[in-house]
Length: 129
Image (tube, rainbow, N blue to C red; front, side, top):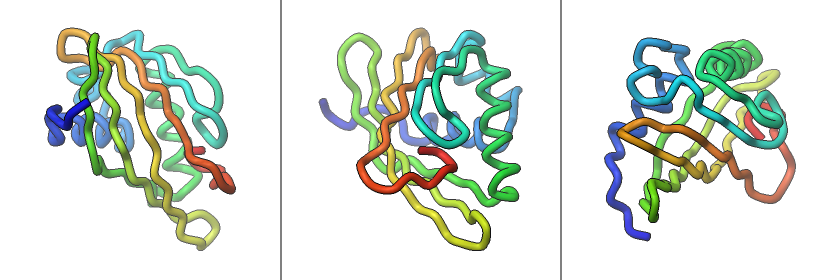
């Protein structure tokens, strides 16, 4: 894999989720997007853009709007697979939380169809992992 995917486009896609911008999200995600992950607000499997946006809104409420994310690396694989390394931050009960996750994305026709959120070892934050 080599880093070739457009950072700006992926950052805009993640920003649309974090800010709950449904209009911007529809340009980047399929309506039947599937997000899987373990722990916190994204536990399990979520199907559909509106439920995914609802889960991100839940993270925003939990962190009083302090949740943020940035794309730090992008790797493009075969058959529309992209791995995004994302750094997250938030305040939870006055404590600063930071984490790095790998987001394995399946894309088709310029839209993200699925995201598998992978968390590293260690204690869970309760926000995104």
